[in-house]
Length: 338
Ligand code: HEC
Ligand code: HEC
Picture 1 (cartoon, helix red, strand yellow):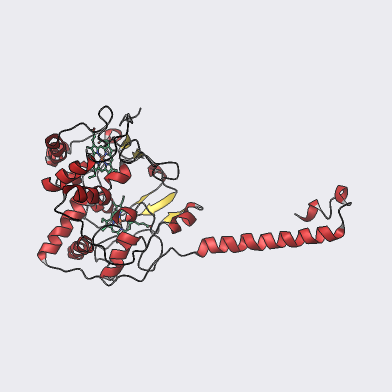
Picture 2: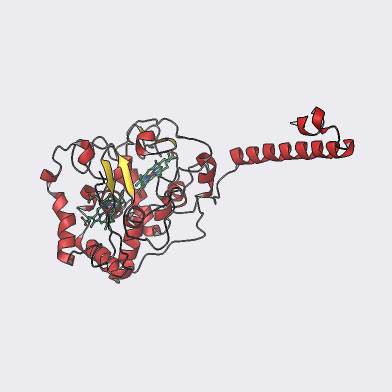
């Protein structure tokens, strides 16, 4: 490194004073890089103390939480082992028991992301307070304040009302305990550093959406159910491309094959052209068990049809009403690219 100004024979003309200065600059720079690396390795994500929330364990809360977990928020899509040899990837194994597995390169991930056990069994959430669980779901840090890889869609759940998040927790607390210690998630550098900026602490209570207004409710549901994040086009860093909200085209490659999300905007030529009744029927028809036929895994789908097939009609209608209000975007999507 010092070769350029000091020891290289051809550079002897350089005044010694300047060489000395350069050396210090060199050391300064080295120290700076060292400090930056240390900072990068140790930086903690933004987090607040766990909020003082309490899940109420009444049967009504548990039932509401189960509906949210299984049919509306997609939690079961990831936190339950799935059978990708059948259409829609029906659940196998214990609900919330973790998939006992990790997703890695086969899912296009920079490392290995392992699914935690959400029951109160060994390796699960027994020692977590309700507030710590709520903070993980909506604010993206674990019990110790460490970042959760944003495959866990806490950004979508940020708007989840206190009533909904505590109902989900009531449901988790009601699950039969499963003992399953998961392997540790490992994310490659530099992604391991950048994800530390993903968690965003909330600053207070999160109110209910206006459930009497279908468009407001639909907006809430398309956010928390992940419709918007899957049905919007993203760039290489997986950031949504402005102007392409709900316009489809995002590629999902995994054990379900290669499939792109559809355009859900009301563009007359390339968007969603279903009547309200057809839209509702498209979802509810997937509740028929015959849908879960054996399928070539490459011909499967990443769209959570089975989970959403039991979404209630007023919720589906609210989603439809909201989708009618989004900006039409012309974007022809071939959902099954060759
Ligand atoms: C798209 C997949 C996906 C969905 C949907 C999802 N999660 Fe997760 N979740 C994950 C992954 C992956 C992790 C672990 C991240 C890591 O290891 O950094 C995680 C972590 C968690 C944690 C932290 C547990 C721990 O031990 O660190 C909790 C609690 C949790 N999820 C609850 C939920 C709930 C409740 C829902 C629904 C509201 C949900 N998740 C939806 C993928 C998902
Ligand atoms: C994990 C990503 C993901 C999530 C979450 C998701 N979708 Fe999809 N969706 C897809 C993909 C991929 C397709 C295309 C493949 C298919 O039709 O099965 C699709 C297809 C569709 C279609 C069929 C369109 C057509 O023209 O055939 C509709 C309607 C739809 N999604 C609506 C929704 C709504 C509403 C939500 C939220 C409640 C949602 N999706 C959530 C990935 C997703």
